Image 1 (cartoon, helix red, strand yellow):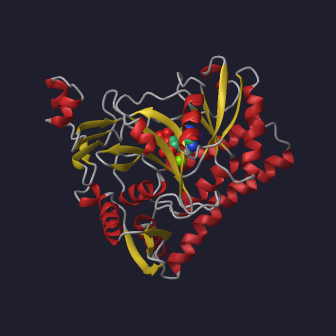
Image 2: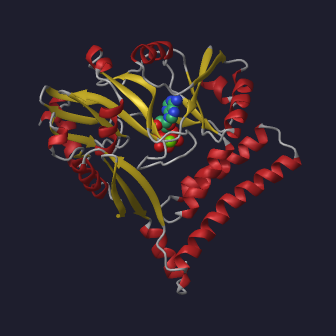
Image 3: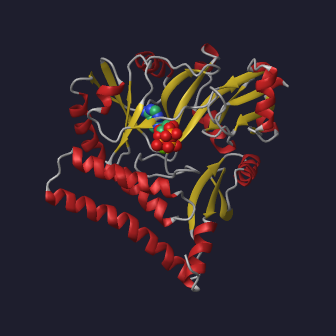
Length: 379
Ligand code: ATP
Ligand code: MG
């Protein structure tokens, strides 16, 4: 089969791949995706191949797009940075949206989400917002971007003041996943007019934890998520570290929809707050206000959900999206269905030639669980 061939897998490894049922459909067949004949994604990590790796049979041959690897998290700035980096480190803003790999297949751009789905909505945006000239000059590269903004189907956020944008944080070789050094990435983004996730500073490893702490405090005040700490040459794996604001926002979200989220997700965010409080040498006063903030994030969110269900409302997250093409909208709804999302379209209208759609993402598990408890069901 074309996958085993493209990846040069031995017969026994190819059989294991098949046996473990790791390959899933990555794309819906449709003229909007006309450059792709078929494509599969890795639903789990397999050997060196990350979850989300895509193998596409395109009109120009078979293409490999490596998945975006996991970024490990620091709980302490000191001594973690010292332990993992050598001489110098770069701090980049960790933007809070969703991970997209943008690639060029045949004659068009394709936007792949973290798990390896070609997303119709994101692909339409990529084709509208980005020029082809970067890919004409560098056809074998992919742009690893954070897609952020209010009109995000997966992580809608107002903090960036945009409806929808791509911010490039890595440029990588598609088939190997090898990244360009940070200066090179910066140069190419400037040359081709691509927006870059902000590069906040570069410093010696020696005093990096102090610099990081200042950066984190400023980002926290602005309601931003955190930093990704990188080796300037990209030889070491990056590490992430988040603000208290981001941890609390995640907790609010996770507890509002508590039954859709794993316990680990919540627990790890609470532990992070503890390490940050310790490392930032907080006064009793500061610790108290952190505790209050943390507690409120958890309790208020969940009480709100209970109230909603008690008043006969379903627990939903509303997303508002704009499409240029009705076909793409329908394709996107099909994509949501296939990704296992429960949803209902609550409103659709035309505005200046575009289609505005409001979708309720239904948190079925949380709704059902609360309903059950409100009827006397035991935990
Ligand atoms: P992971 O599997 O990497 O832990 P996650 O889904 O838990 O991913 P996050 O906690 O959001 O994700 O952290 C990693 C993600 O941060 C990356 O996958 C990427 O989408 C996003 N990101 C935002 N800004 C940057 C940046 N400047 N450099 C690298 N990644 C960034
Ligand atoms: Mg994220």
